[in-house]
Amino acid sequence: MRALHTAATGMMAQELNVQVISNNIANMRTTGYKKQRAEFQDLLYQHVRRVGTQTSDQGNILPAGIELGSGVKTVGTPRVMGQGNIMPTTKDLDVAIRGDGFFRIQMPDGRTAYTRDGSFELDAQGRLVTAQGYVLQPGITLPQNSSGITINQQGQVSVSQPGQTTPTQVGQIELSVFVNKAGLQALGDNLYVETPASGTPINGQPNVDGFGNLQQGNLEQANVEAVNEISDLIAAQRAYEMNAKVITAADQMLSATSNLMR
Image (cartoon, rainbow, N blue to C red; front, side, top):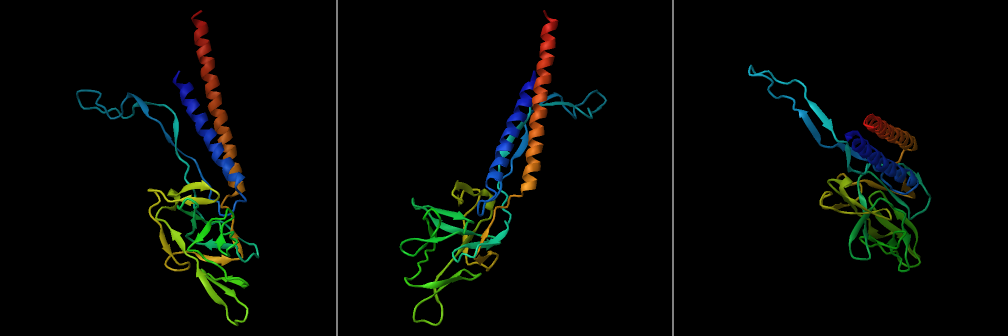
């Protein structure tokens, strides 16, 4: 019976939907995390009576046909790249992006990755690195015995050095934007890499020509809304249950039919 297969596709789709929602909820406290959503499309139809066909020699047209659907399929789990809340941390090396842009990160294999996670640290050479030790690009190294690091909204990094009365600029943080930032591929560790869908990165200085500005001593929180995720989870669970009931009903109908043949 066709209904069994159709309902099964619905159950598989809602199972994937729950997996996406659970990942969003699990990352509610992940810095710079961008939530995902599952998107679906209907499958092919069997046209028993095709709408618009001619029904007589006088040119009468069938106003409504008979189309039997075969279920649902998942077409994507795109990320929603909206701005997350910016929360203060009072840590000098924490930097949040308010607006568009990603930090560029140098991976150990030579690739360039991108992130919204601005929770930077210093390595043994005084370079700004991520929590995994990956170097921020372009590289910024703080001089020894320096103190009072300042990162302004334009990404200029300045420090105070012994014997000097004015801060010394030691580097410039740059950002990268994409035509289709939802087309980036996630690697984990809050990192993304470019794909043919995202387009090539456009690099520039913060707070200039559409690039976001930087907020020192702050971090961007995940853009996950707990209430929305819980309501979506309940809706997905109910849809799963209804598809399961369809399978139960189809099984009972097949059982009744087989009993008639005994």
